[in-house]
Image (cartoon, rainbow, N blue to C red; front, side):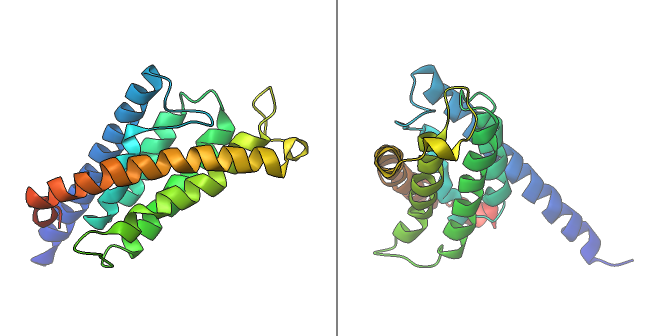
Length: 183
């Protein structure tokens, strides 16, 4: 019998469990932000976006963040458009953050904190600026002024959360030796 099978199965279970916990945390934290009107729309301060630093610790954060965002966006007043494009922005950001995880400035993965800012600024900014009054994505609603305003407001909120909450979360988790436990 192959001695690696239990380890491989155990690693898969661990990966799935980590992804599930991250997804649940992301969804719950977004719903908390929604309760105080900070989760959806042009001005967003989703506390859950601090978790976008987690791909620095584990690749399980990639599907975990994407699933968590999808679940959180089920409550979005922007509807199906947010389910698809919001989740896409989070998935792309998680992949890029994971790719940048080893680039550090004074020990901090500052570059890993920036992909969520970039993807949400571009994708969610476009989404918010193009939504019609009935929640359908409509190119005829597009204007550079509306896009600029939406992108700026989404991007600033994202930047604040990722840098002010995400990087301190990284430091806290690193000090708690979480990195070794997740590997």
